[in-house]
Every structure is written in C-alpha cells, then in structure tokens.
Length: 100
Image 1 (cartoon, helix red, strand yellow):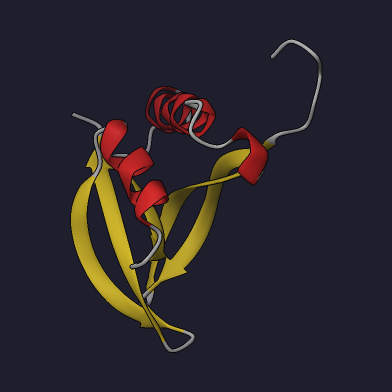
Image 2: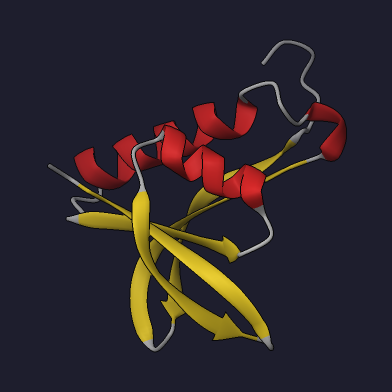
C-alpha cells in the first residue's frame, strides 16, 4: 500500500498438520497495523491465487486455540472448522475452505 512500509507477510506454504500435508495460508501482521483489514485482504488474495492459479481443491489455516484474531480472519475469507490437534504441547485449531 502507500508508503512502502513493511507491515507483515502472508502466503501459501505446504504444512504438515497432524500428519497431513496440506497447502496453508499463513499471515503475520505487525501489531501496530492489526485490526485494519490487512490480514483479511492478503489472506483473501492468497485464497484466490491458491484456487485460480495453483488449482488446489481446498486450502487450510491453523493457529493456536487462543489466537482468536487469526481465526476470525480465516472465517472472513470463508473458512470453517476442520479439526483440532496438538502441536508443541498446545492445542491448535485447523480451518479449511473448499474451492467450490
């Protein structure tokens, strides 16, 4: 956006989630720039790219159960609860969205 300031990152990576290898949208916004819609905008662009260009049938996102803001971003781009799992001794929530 205007100003050329680095505010975070967002992208698609291949992740191992509870022994399942899947494409995952990850996003990290510097706290100062949170709650301005940047994560939702970037995550939506990644979702569209994953479906239109990479032709993935579904895309995932996961975070710790206590990271409600990231879960809300996933919901805003159409993701729904997929499952829970443990990672590094902490409960994680996995969300998914299908291409159709």
